[in-house]
Length: 236
View 1 (cartoon, rainbow, N blue to C red):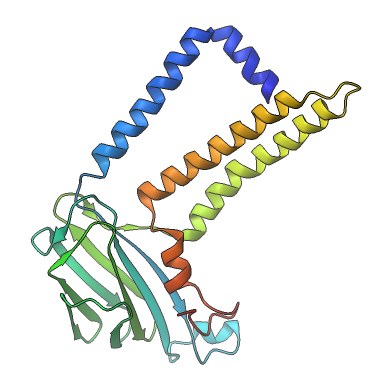
View 2 (view 1 turned 30 degrees about the vertical axis):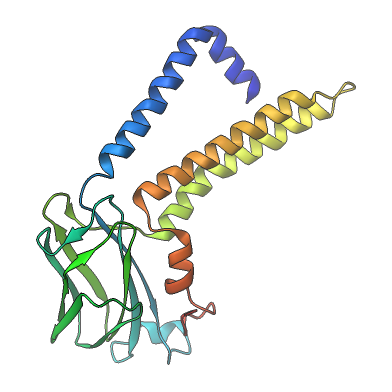
C-alpha cells in the first residue's frame, strides 16, 4: 500500500496532494457542521420474542413480539412538535401496548388498533427516547420532519457490512506490508508505523461518519441488544 501511495504522490506532486487532502478535510468538516444544523431525528429498532423456541416461531402471526425503538436527536438543535409532521408506529397486526423504557415527561402515546401516534413536546440535541412495543406481526416507525423529510433508519447490520468491506482489505494490506518490511534482512520500522497511522486514520474517519448519521453504539448496546442469540430478552 505504501508503494502505491508513494507512486501516486510522485505522479500528482507533493504540493497538489497536500492541497487535495486539505480540501477534502475542509469539505467534510463544512458538510458536518452544515448538516448537523438541521432538525434531525434518526432511529433504530430491535425485536425479540420471549416465547419463541425456534426460528419457525418467528414466522407465526399469533406470536407476541417486543420491539425496542430508539429515537435519537442527531442534530445540534432542540426539536419540538412544530417540526415533527408525523411520528407514529405502524403494525401489520394489533398493537397491544407501548412502554416507555427511558423516562421522559414530555411524551405521550395514543394507540388506535394498528397505529400508535407519538407526541413529543421537545427533544434536546443528543437526547433520545426508547419505546418498547408489544405487538403481533411486524412494526415500522413512520415519521417525517418538516425540514429534513423522512426519519433515517440507522440499521446497525448494514454499518457492520460497510465496515467489513473497508476494514478487512486494509488489515490484509497492513499485514502484507508488515511482512514485506519486517521480513527483510534489514527490517524497516518507519514504513510499518506509517501504515499503522494510515489505518488508524481510516478507522477514525469511519467513526466520524458513524457519528454523523448513526445512533451511538453505547445506546444501542444498552437498550436494543439482546442477552442471548435467540433474542428472547433485552439486556436492559
